[in-house]
Image (cartoon, rainbow, N blue to C red; front, top):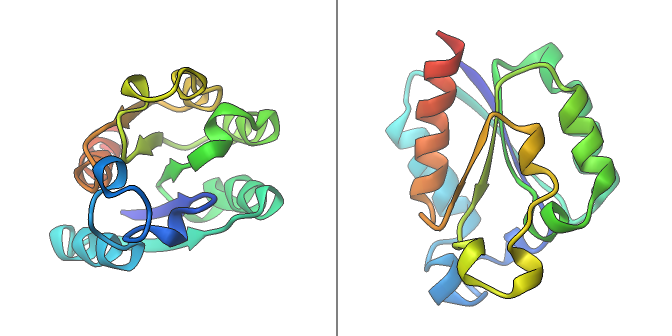
Length: 141
């Protein structure tokens, strides 16, 4: 499978951010774990703090990939534009959050982007990405 993994704002700061919420690992280390666990699959990793760049990646995903994993970060609670791009993207999609968004501040409890995906995983730190790859594989088959 070819899978695009998009990470949104501030995820480039993993390893420095609240470790109780986000874990100890950097984004680079999470990418290495994914590639190590799923050696037969091809991954493209993209991180941006810019909403428009994330939207461009989503809009082009169906042409080039079998599945999409997205951690929109804070945009999951605010970005109607990312939600709209996900709605139009016709490929299996899973939203991932490192932290348990339901156990955090009230404004984080609702993701407006998750309903445009096949499902979402929250609170499993880096293991959420591994589960998302597994689930996309089950959807694609």
